[in-house]
Image (tube, rainbow, N blue to C red; front, side):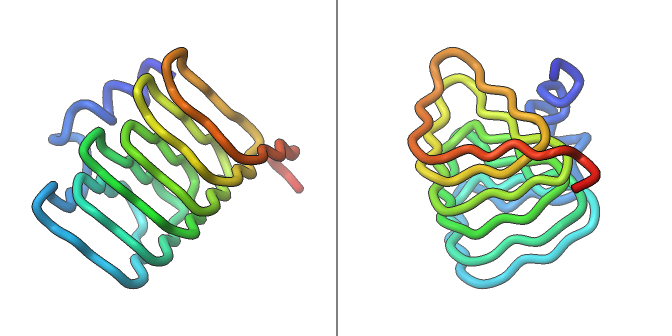
Length: 119
C-alpha cells in the first residue's frame, strides 16, 4: 500500500484533479486516475484509480479498479482490485472488493464483502 499512498499524496502522478472549490453532480467515467478534492454526488465508473482527497465529500455509487479514501465518502464502493481507507477518512458505505486496507484512525460504518479477484 505504500506505493499507492505515494500516488495519493503526489498530485503530479495523478491524471486529473477536481479541485476543492468545485461542487459537481452527475456521472463521471474515466480510464486512468482521478482525485476528487471537492464535493461530488452521483456515479463514478472506471477501471483506474479513484482518489478521494482529505478535503473531499463524496456521495456516490462507485465502480473502480482501486479506490483510495482520505476524505468523506458515503454510498457504495465496488472495486475490482482494492479499497484503501486511510487515517482520518470517514466511510459510511458498503464495500465490495477482493482486497481491503484499513488504516488505524479511519471511521468505517457499513458492510464489507470480500470476493475472489476472478469472481
